[in-house]
Structure formats: structure tokens, C-alpha cells
Image (cartoon, rainbow, N blue to C red; front, side, top):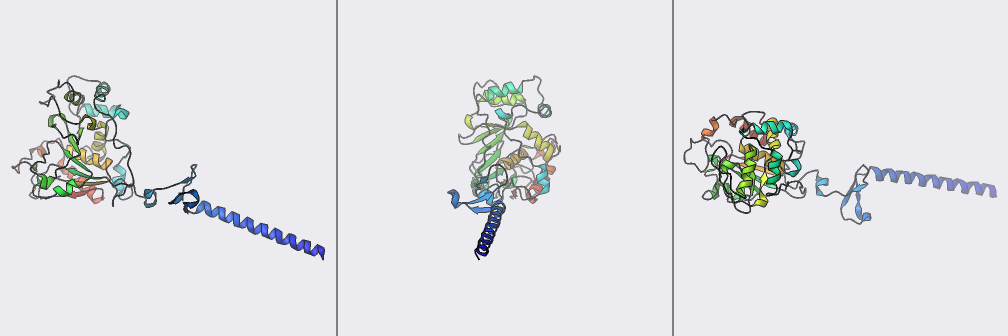
Length: 350
């Protein structure tokens, strides 16, 4: 009898050990495969995603849960909505020329120096070193907060803005980017009154309010020398045309357009149509690389097919379109493609 009881107890004990072993194995496997756990035991209040790798548990913010890179209704930089766009877009190229990317690749250097060839050559790096003693030379767009929405308006100079009534809508954006002359006084109802970024080259430059970033689009080393001079000694007064000897802008907000980014647009997007992309295209792709949502105003012809500027009374003043420097039709095609890919919203005006 005692022997039978001993055998029975041993059998029950073995069975209990076996069952507990199965439960432990199952629970361990479940922990490893469940994608989310309640993080209360970790002292948090959010859900935690278990991510494979060597870092263990990784707490995800809202962007991790939604899979979006921003808090906008549409995030320009998110892949997967257009194969055409994804095959062209390169987020690794900075639109700003800084201390960190001063050295241009040889092919970029050659291409850039031929845009407006100069009789006298200059060492670009030496020129930049001097310039970056006057202006920051940093990339202000390096870090993006995925829990915010950076909405940007790219405002062109087309006559189709006249009578559009877009002004209030334009002013509602975080960044408002304008180019060259682009007056706002007297046209506020149609083009808005605010500006955060103004893109110009030396021959089109004008004074700006202190709260506006001047983005210099350089076509030659002399342009870099000019901005350094215009913010200090005022010695340079002529490039291929008369330029302002002094410029009133906020030095801390001066940014330099990256020639490598310039060539990237020429190679990948406008595909060598025209000698080089227009200022409008340069600004548009700058926005596509630093913004979450991009809305485009004042590009293309007006409703009558005329190409002119919104501040001009002559509707037939758009002779720039006939120069052959830019391919306006192909650039219009690219804008249409971007709109169809849901990367931009285009407001056509009148």
C-alpha cells in the first residue's frame, strides 16, 4: 500500500512539473511574438512595441503607431504612395550648403562652375570658409518632429494670382516661400503678407525684414563672395550686372542653396530639360525636402494662357519663357505629376 501511494505521489508531482514547464514555454513564446504589451510594469503609460534587435524594448511615439512621419493629414515624405516619386526622391541630399557638406563632388563642381563661367577662378572652399564666419553655415532642417505638421506654401510669381483671393490661405502656413522680386505690399489679398523664406540670387536681391530667411541661390563662386561683401565691406558692386553693394537682411537667417541639390533636381527631376531648373523649381523641391505638406500657388500661365508676373499690368510680358534657359512646359508636367502623386496641392488661380 505504502509503495502504491509513493508511486502515485511521484506520478502526480512529475505531471505537475511537466504542465508548469509547458505553461512557462508557452508564455515565454507569447511574450516574444506579441507585437504590443501594456507598459505599466515598465513604469510607463503608453503601449510598448517589442522590436527585434539588440536594443530590447523600444517605446514608440505616435508616429510609430500610425506609421506616418508627421502629424499632417498627408505626409509628403512617406513612401509607398507613388513608385515614380519614390524612385526619384532622395532624402539624403541636403538642400542647404553648410560647413558639413562644403566639399562638392567633382562632377557637381564642374557642372556648377559652368552655369555662369567666370574669367577668374576662385577656390570655393576658401570662399565658403570666409562666408561661414559671417553667416551660420548650419542646416536648420536637420531634425524633424514627427508629432508636428510643417505646412509650407510655395508662392510663385505668376499672373494667375491676380484676383485669386489666396492671401489668407497662404498666410496660414508655417513656412511661406517666395522668390526674386515677389512684392506683397498692395497684393496682400491675393498673395498674402507673410514671408518666412525668400530665395534670390545677387542680381535679383532686395532688402528683407529681420524675421525672413534669405536663401541665396548661387550660380558661381562670385555670388558667395558677393553675399559676404554685401553683409560686411560692400566692395562688390557688379557680377555680370550691377548688384546691391550692401544688403539689409538678418545674417543669422542667411542660408546658401546647395549646388549638389541644384544638380540633383536637374538630373533626377527636370531630366536635363533646359540648361538648368528655374528658380520656381528650386524652391519647390527645397520645400519638398524640408516640409511635411506642400501647397503651391502662382505657378504656370493664367487662365488665358499668358505667362507674366502678378505685379505686371502687361499680360504679354512673359518673354522669359522664350529664352530656352528653362523648359517651362516640362516643369509644368513635373508639377502635374507631383500633384497626381498626392505630394503637392496646386492652386491654379485665375
